[in-house]
Image (tube, rainbow, N blue to C red):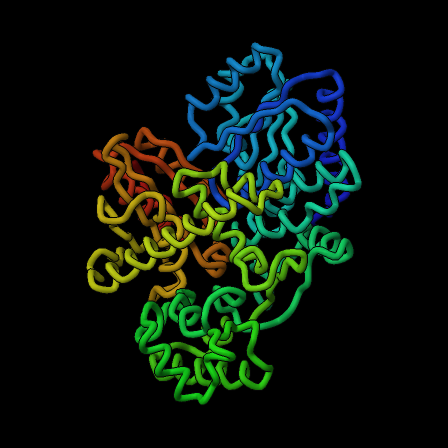
Length: 485
């Protein structure tokens, strides 16, 4: 069956959404933006916030951990006040809940997750999946928000780089050379032409703009390299053995400061080290890829590299200060930026502690028949479980088994689940978003997401039932057999 390209239809839908938003603004309707706390959700709402500010709109922003009935109820109450709710990076997976709570009230959804349920007639639902476009790889919610903002006013093209940040934060760099593709290409092109973005090929070390080289190397987690990841002293020794100058004029050098010859020497040494540790050559090649540089941002800051910008936004969301991330997206480089830097440092330290703890407690990662399970329990904070699962999933022995990671939230008596799969599994017919949703609903929880990454919230007492059911469904998908029950 030939796939019909419906890109133009989708873009027309974002244009229609822009017209509807402007119509509401011109009527004096207040806008209520409700978004998710990850990098994509924060950058998306930052784009819309800036566009609405420029349009003279009256609006407010709310950032949420996840979609639930409480969020829909609040939106319903606000809608009664002649206010227009816009759900950003959430909503598509909970259409039935929204329809029930909002009844006949008008609402808009900008989301790239797999839709579940029927869209109500009173909703404007902008989602790439409705047009046969892959929302896990081709465009994020920040990308949708950018296209809407662009159609609201052409001058909003200067916000395109924030959609690049959102897409990278949602790990959409799935194309060859760790590149963005699909509709994200349009957004990258807009930002490059507007003079805000530069695209280069380089070693993919986190902190390439900001961190001393040995520290950036120690933060390498994809892949996680024993003897280097988390080991600053050993990284210093490793780099010294290559005769690469680590300082210039008493200042530590970052990756951005190295010459091409020094970078070639570093990559060759890392490649050989990985091979000596039993990694395959293609894992080492993952160290080279596309970098997105925000050239209007100051050099040697975490806002200069788009992936690091995304981590900063994710950190503000996960550490309960998402408003700081939104402020940065909307242009604050003063007090909010200073707070974000401290938050980013705390978040990095937290993630590093949990990775070090896992390396000392390998029994917390169990291999089941069809899945891996990471038992975070109370030992891994739910704020970091999605980041930890992303990192761990890239270095599991069997790439044809998804990782189901969870942490326990005592206050809610619930487990927060983060599931990850490799592209090879998706090609074999695995759709994690659908599997997690079905398993969560069977266990009195909620869940969903993308084919390659998903999340859920499930009552703690249903934990083992949920995990066993995931294992069963994955096995059925891989073998093509359906069991009873």
